[in-house]
Amino acid sequence: MLSLGFLVTPGNCDAASLVAMLLGATATALLLVRLPGPVLLTFIPAVLLPSWLLCGGLATADIALVASLATAAWRTRNTELMLLNGGVTIAGVVLGALLGGAVSIALAGLPELPARELVAGAGFLAGYWLGETAFVEVVKRQRLRGAAQLPRSNPWANFLLLFPGYVLANLLLARGPVYFVPMLLVLVLALGLIALYLTATTAREAMLSERAHALASAAASGDVPPEMLEERAMELTHELRSPLTSILGYAGLLAKQRRGADPGLEEGYVESIASSSSYMLRLVNNILDLQRLESGSQPIQLRPVHLDRLLAESLAGIQPTADEKGVKTMLAVKPELPPLLTDELLVRRAVDNLLSNAVKYTRPGDEIRLAADREGAGIAISVADTGIGLTREERDRLFERFFRGRRSEARIERGTGLGLAIVREAMAQLDGEVRVESTLGEGSTFTLWLPLPQ
Image (cartoon, rainbow, N blue to C red):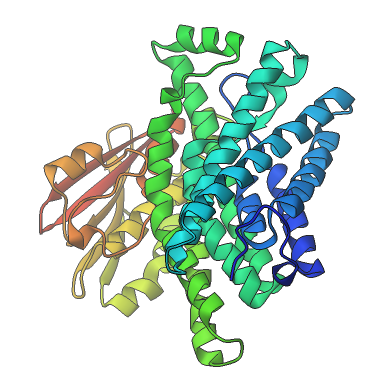
């Protein structure tokens, strides 16, 4: 039974749970994301919600205060700013606990169902956002200098954290800190790293767009139009939905399973959680790779590259998966091709992404052909398959971030939707190009063209 009151319920909150909550809240509070303009985004409600559900408002206020003061002390030695950081989190917890408690009382007559606690949790998160927003407005009206440096949550992010917070509370209650801590870190670190990407790309695109002047004006006033962030935030929501649903679903089953009742079943749950966590890690890695490419922060290291060796190694990398799936592979490199003067890691990453896609979207008995030949003043590397092919819409949008085809056969395999965006950026960095030809139901050919040294 979860606690929904404002006061501590001792039966649900032992010392180990409080320590786990405090460490989790402090780690989460450190994951501040700077949005365009002087706005800091925080994910601390990810921990404060399960803390309130389990321990009540007073304990949660204590946890929030210690975590926010510790974070502020790490960021600055300004005493006024430290106190304001503590104040904004306390205001959020107090109003969140009052609103969540009021919702809980209103629903008290209903049967004891998970939905009741979820609705109360939604009330807490809504109240938290209202409380911190009101506190920041008061600070602004008082013209205190620290207003722009106060971390704030986002209502959409809070909504995403509602179900995870509920599951984490149940997991901690049923299994203790051993399962709770790694689950919390997987969730919050993934959200934090992806939000860092959204921050960088949104700021860059906004400054390059016709709204750059509006962004500069908004930054000067301290208010950033939220619509500049919503498109990327919705893309993020879509891509996180599947792995988070899997992770949280199996965590919920783990919480309901009586400890030690069925070790084999528990092992299966943990393996499923690990699989979805691995997908989230690949998503984060792809996002960070794409960010480095787009920002130009990854230095280009030019050196002679012999394609016969590089392509043979790339094909060997996907051979086990192709063999398991019953897909034939072929390597055809034109003899005596001159070496390229290029960045080997970027070329290898592009080829690997194309081969990985080829294996995903081919059927047993299909064939993948990796080839290289002279083409004009450069060399063309092609990855051809006899797989499911592409529709016109898919060809037109293929290199967009997070784009996935809508057809059921295109969604059988899980993908991040970022691999081809990375290929496009890698070719742009190397003064090359990427082309695609495809026939629906018959296969696709992707070609990387790279210039030879003059």
